[in-house]
Structure formats: structure tokens, C-alpha cells
Length: 203
Length: 98
Image 1: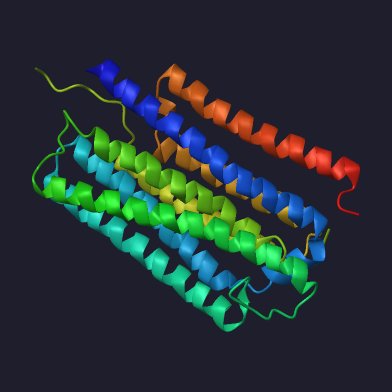
Image 2 (image 1 turned 90 degrees about the horizontal axis):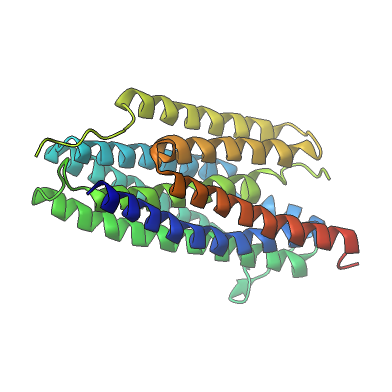
């Protein structure tokens, strides 16, 4: 039984390694282009709303805490607490997506969506389009992971209501927890790279 | 069958890590408001890495996981740094695209 549990955790981490490399490719492209078209990157990055980005970071960190509490509740077989913390995690995930949607809407209104609605007139708009493309690719993939995560959490909640998660068996809750925390970590890096580091026109 | 004794963090630990993560977020936002030239990105990434480490060790409970899982986590970090490190040194040393 112990060995089964170990292999489930190991397998989940192997999947997360592939996810690290998937997001790593986009982070790599982002950093390379930032070095290449630095002025465009600064002007693009300065359109970001740091306030909304910071609120979203806090929301995600809170959701990671409620997730860890859901896993903990599963380990001590407390059904009602599981449901409560899983629902809180779903709610915080939805708040994150709504705020992200507001930001996307702002970018649309300001003509900062390359290919569809682009009339950005800051420094070097041609290469700033690269910044916005990568911004939408990275935050979009991150948001897609959140949507999948919320789907998984909904399933966990339904099973929790049926009393499926006990001290003896709670691997799915734990694995979804690992996934949710991973998605949180991606945002932990996206937030400074997209919003913060280009606030000043340094090097 | 007696219930398995499982290594797990306490609620107090989780709460402390959570508060620490929020404080670090405040610090990174505050640091971004000060013009530190090239150090803005260094500080931002250092703080982000601290936060990520806390999440991996305490929320994902990597500190209680088996040796093979720990090796897997470190290998992810290794290959990510290889990807970023080698790509960036290549581009920087060639002065691309100019």
C-alpha cells in the first residue's frame, strides 16, 4: 500500500516535470526576446496593471492554502471540511479567472491584442506585439490549466460529498493538490516577469 | 488494519507558510517600485524562487517524499536551468539579433 502511494506521487511528479519543460520553453522565449527587444518589452510590460496582478497573486496563494487544507482534511477523514476547503479553492480559482478576464478586456479595449485588435502606439509597437503574443500565450496556457484544475476540483468535491476521501484513501485529492500548487508556482514566476521587472527603464 | 501514520505538516505550518508567501508578494511588489537598475529582475526572481521553494517543500510536501521523487524534482530544475542557461548564453554571446 505504501509502495502504491509512493508510485502515484512519483508518477504525478514525472508529469509535472513535463509541464515544467512545457512552460519552460515559453519562459525561455520570453527572456530571449526581452534581451533582444528590450525597449519594446518595457513599453509592453508597462501597460500591465500591477494592482490587479498583485491581487491575483494573493488570490492564488490563498487558493493554494485552502487546497493544502483540503488535502489535510482528507488525511484526517473530515468530510465537511474537505467540501468546505475544496469549494473555497474553486471559488478563489474563479475569482482569479474573472480578474484575468478583466485584464484581458482592458488589453482588448486598448488595442493590445496582436492579430485581432492591435493599435498599440508605445515604443517599438512591432516588437511589442511579440511581448503581447507571449503574454497571451503564457497567461492563456496558465488560465487553461486553472480551468482544468477547477474541473478536477469540482469532481473531487462531488466525491467528497459521497464520502470517498478518507485517511486510508485520498490519493486523488493529494494529486490534484500537487497539480494546483504547480499551477500556482507558474504564476509566482509569471507575475514578476510580466508585471514587475520592467517598471523602471533599467538594464 | 490500523491507520497508517502519515508524515504531514500541521495546520500551523501551513498557515505560517501561507502568511510568509503573502508577505513575500508584498515585498516583491514594493521592491519593484524602487529603481534598482539591473537588480530589479534579480530581486524579483530571487523572491519568486523563495516562494516557489516554500510551495514545493511545504505545500507539495516534497520534504516528506521518497528519494526517487526528490531526484525527479531536482532533475526538473536541472533541465529547466539547462534550457534557460544554455539558450541565454548562446543568444547573449552572439549579440543576436543585432
